[in-house]
Image 1 (cartoon, each protein chain N blue to C red):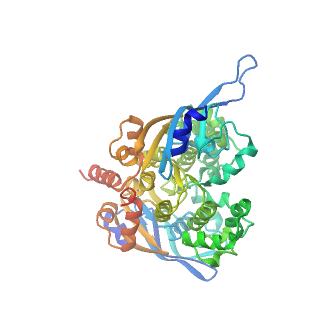
Image 2 (image 1 turned 90 degrees about the vertical axis):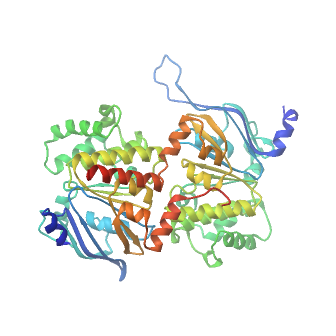
Length: 283
Length: 272
């Protein structure tokens, strides 16, 4: 099994091979089996090393289930999840630990993912200490600088920062241990447009300068387009369309992708709606 | 301000003049003027910290302690200035003359109360209807916001609904007493793009139908353009640009408006 797949695992940061994930709902009746929800159905994905890969879909599309599988926080019902050359679907929790260090996460809500009682220096240092690396302090200062924060933030606490700054700190913590994969789950969805553009620019810069593979999950295809070269469109647990972001953005093939794009608010569309409203009011 | 009223012969629903808000001696909002005519839809846009939410909280009479406001906020048919008015005065307006929708529907709803009871509450609280009548109307209201199976939703608790469904419930509560003014503060920011599009369409529909004036706060100009006729751009506590939404979008004057437009669009793909 492992030998025949040696070739693709060499080139791919993430390989999702025919993965399904089912969840059992609470039993409705004593006499019938509990209903099953198909969160993911026979999903196949290949994320090449050092690429920037987007996963787009609305709530309930299976995005979060997929993120949890890639982060080894959950196991598939069937199929294989191969991360950085290792099939993690069968590994024990203990065997997963060194792999977990190779993958870092950035979440939507930085307030929920930064410990409010820890100083910034300790938050960013934590993954480094787990790794047992030397020169922790130098690395902390270095990554904070990379995300645009000066060394005087070291002794402060998360609540002293704005949402955008907190997200920069989360990113600093994530890149500190030099991960192979950076997994960003709706990382800019809670930010206003100005800060969102800044954080996307930062991720863009980091992905170009650093060695990691970026997996970026969002409900907004225009956000994915800003940072990712490839994208998979997820709908009701299935990949309905996959390919180069620019091609899918400019020429979507599936109706669902078209609907998803049509829902993204753009200035052109807003302007058209405003004009239509003005015209109906002043005939 | 009064010029607008005399010109059309109609009294504005809301008149805000020289609104200043300070916290501990630091002024955060530096004199906002705003007039809303009946049925008019005005957007306030700006980045976090621009003072847009403070302005709308002051109008809703919901400024938290420690914040002080000066200036005037007047509503039609209300004698007193709402800035510094007693809570008993503001409480009679809030929920009856003004409806409110906030960003986070989970915190806007009471987690221990069934949906139907929460929608009904705002109606009997303001003595618009008796309790039993309010319960029946609540189901109709829920249905009017496009919720499937409104009878079941009315019996559900907030945590049993999705984010989009919860925001529909909050909108049903806001529109329950057919208010003259609907205030929406980032109502779709916590939602998916597809759900956002549906909720925006619903706001448009409900405002059209009820004839309420709309004050819509967002950081996203593309969203504001979908629902508003006029827009105020706030930056560091001051209105830096105002005008009809079409001209502000197609020919922005202030450099801050231009940078907001650029950030909204996320134009170009990677490496551009």
